[in-house]
Image 1: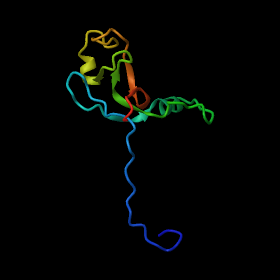
Image 2: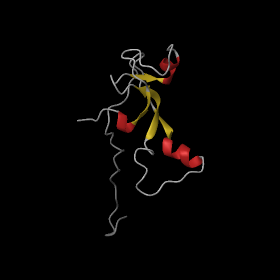
Image 3: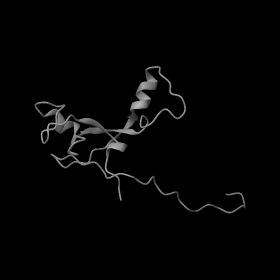
Image 4: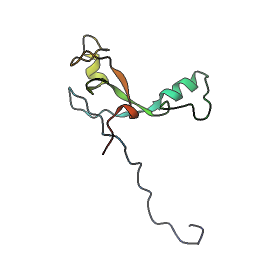
Length: 107
């Protein structure tokens, strides 16, 4: 019930994604988000953040990597099969962990 005594029968819509779903360039499998963020890992080690200083630290991490140069994405399984797991096989750029701000925005 709300403030005026009316029942709320509307269901809240799910969180709307602001980015394109990451897909592995090699096996074409969807790369799923993990239940952790970089900020939560750092806090578990005993550090703390001042309000407003977090930036992208509390965005969920995904189970894969992305090349910032050519936007190639790989799941952790396909990345482990590479000769050099830190280097992109297409352009030679260094892979980074996939986070929401590194993904293409939905237009």
